[in-house]
Length: 117
Image (cartoon, rainbow, N blue to C red):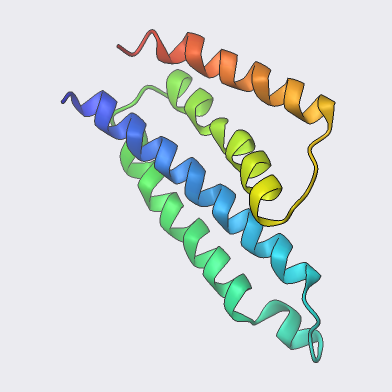
């Protein structure tokens, strides 16, 4: 497997993990907290920021191989992952505009990704 394909996979994984951390943060806002400190220092929030921190290093490594013009497009997949996870885990109903926007994002990713291979 070529390094570009491997690092592109890392970027897709990083985008997915970013979406998971966003869902954790949103889920934490729905919880009742004892005080203002517990609102910011709880398991969900700390885990979400730890995931963000890990994805930072994943992206630094991946961008050392994948050209920036392709990497930024691949990272846009996090919007689609967030929409899907919010619908599945948080039971949020996506609007037709968010669905259309995500379809355009996925189409753009497909066009740009076809140049990688």
